[in-house]
Amino acid sequence: MNEKSVVRLLGAVPPDRFGKHLATVCAAQQTTVIQSDAAGWTLDGAIDPYLLLRELLPWTRNEGATILFSQSERPVRAFLFDLDATLTTCEFLDTLADELGLGNRIRQLTQAAMDGKMDFAASYRARLELLAGTPVDRIDTLIARLQLTEGAERLCEALHRRRIATAIVTGGYARVGRAVQRRLGIRTLYATELEERAGKLTGRPVGKLVDETEKVRALDDFCLRNGCQRADCTVAGDGANDLRMLAAAGQAVLYSALPAKRSNATSIDRLLEFPELAAAE
Image (tube, rainbow, N blue to C red; front, side):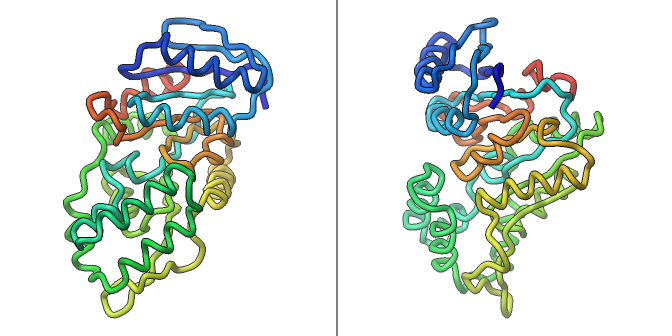
């Protein structure tokens, strides 16, 4: 918990409306909100980052806003991304389910986990069971058509020019993660491996699921490998299972490529407009 931290808004949402929402959320933690500029606020007082982000996340997704919560003044040395609906324009398992005629059943399980209404691991295992028997070559065909979030290439190019280390940290399918990793030149991937036999999914994971606890461990492992600290890292994500990793980072970005108000969707490279991230340009 820091005595002073910063919240910034990006997107089509009127700043005064967001400011009122932020003040209501912070009042519950007895933290004062001071508007510092047109779309920036300083939080004066100790705040629990996890509780703050948990309250802001659904509002952000619903409004199509992008929020930066910064609790560090250190230069950014590492940038970690969620995968589905952050670097890509879909939840991959949902898209695969649509191809198989299982869309409604799997989408309900996905949304329950995204909203924090169902344990991520339980939701994920239930989805995998429904996908058992799916041919891997059919999955590869779908991966080849996968669209990246608008601006993802530009953002990663800017980060890599500044020698900022990048990683994908996702509970999603590692086969998809590796494809996106190659396309964006991202160095490191933490993802869930799915068991394959005779060219088909078995409906079971291999090893641990990358859930919210494993995502924090991934953040720490990435810091160790790159000689940096949590305070040097920016994390971008859009789901409830990202919250603990987001709260642990020096800077957390609540970003969704699939906001409820699609007309308010923001190109992900606009994150570089945040002053705290401008050095990555």
